[in-house]
Amino acid sequence: MIESEEKRKNITQLIETWAKNVKIESYLRGYDIPSLVNSILDNFYPVTFCCGHKGNFDEGVHIEFYTYEGRTDEITSGLYCRDCAERYKKELKAWEVTNGK
Image 1 (cartoon, one colour):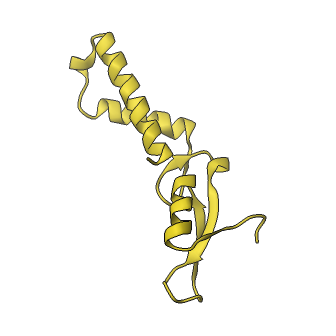
Image 2 (cartoon, helix red, strand yellow):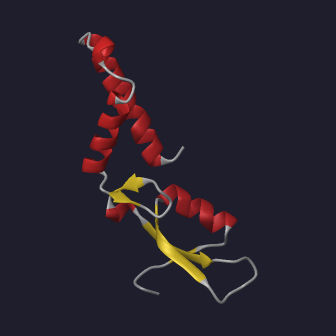
């Protein structure tokens, strides 16, 4: 599972358990907990990577890959979460960019 999705799941479970324990669950609207989880993730994991997942800047992996299969004239480049970067390395034959090379 993608790390940021795992974080979201864990935080959601913690808040839901807390809401049940303090007996406020019945007062919450359907979007209250997801909204709170989004706020927490935005504060602690401020970067949204090119793949759409969240994390800290230093957790990202800069990769490049050919935009169109079989063509080498256009390259896509970006900062991706480690899980997606590893998947793109396998599926799209992406390569990691280090020190601007």
